Image (tube, rainbow, N blue to C red; front, side, top):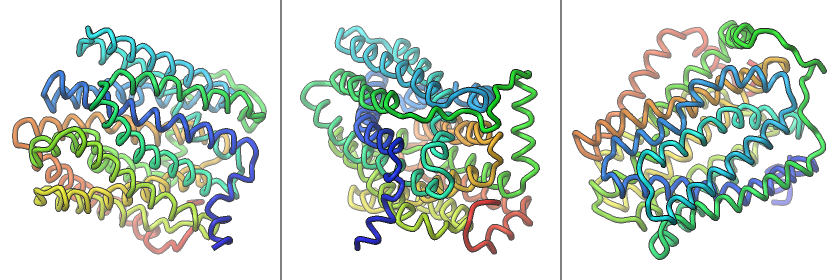
Length: 417
């Protein structure tokens, strides 16, 4: 048991990662409180699944448009400072959203504007944050660090929505936004205490054309079949199987005919499943990871979406939604590790920028699709449509990338691609 515990938390032996991790433990709870409260606020204001999906377009759209050029700057400048500035912007955004909601005069377009600011900050923050892990812990403990970070993210996904549901039921959504703003102070403090800056590996700050360097990063991925297959599967899962923030509230309301407390419960259960998947990955990080899991977990998550569509009860949803969370998390951690370990040091910021672009930028497409389907055909149709489309798209990917898929299925472990 001691050995298992040590293997699970081995990345915490690094001082800088401890500051990062403990700051995130606090901040991410606030982040999930805000996310849950913002979703419910918009849905309560508009009573429209389509307009709820549009909120995510404004949040994740900048990631889709700006991640690639942001990745160039991540490979040029200290990652710690990029993350620090973006976290300060996100802090101010949370306080502004709290003040607007407390005023009682919040309008839909104002919430969209603040979501856009959040998205712009995340476009710079996400690739810098992901590629910073290897500077904090080195390659040996990278998989464990990624999995531990995912663990606290999903523990926060369990705690945050549940607390948000209780707070909203008594005080409304504004305190959730304010508490998120306060929680950011923990991660800002941690970043100030970290000693490593995450400087470019070649020790130089290149100053060439941004789009020329961006194309170099894309060619690096395209010319490596393992990286290319991982990026394609990441795009598919981001679009079709990671839409719980839109699917769950509408399914809770329109299919289960339940309210905010049950919505918070299902969002938390999704986090329970994801936490279990992340801890499993963390405990076996030093033994490597099965790259074939990229394919199998994507298929499993897609199939579970189809099954949920036919289970019109809280019990069935409570059993299947955690399984979706676990499958998505195992896929995400495997993809993240494979891309980071498979890319060259000088391209890692751009590789992770593409990964975050397809992960976060792909969600507006999936959320808009799911929201539009549920708007016209009901809550269950959303789960069924994204699940079937995901299965079909994965099938097409496996046909067109036969050699890469065969190599991935035969590979027992590792991530060097």
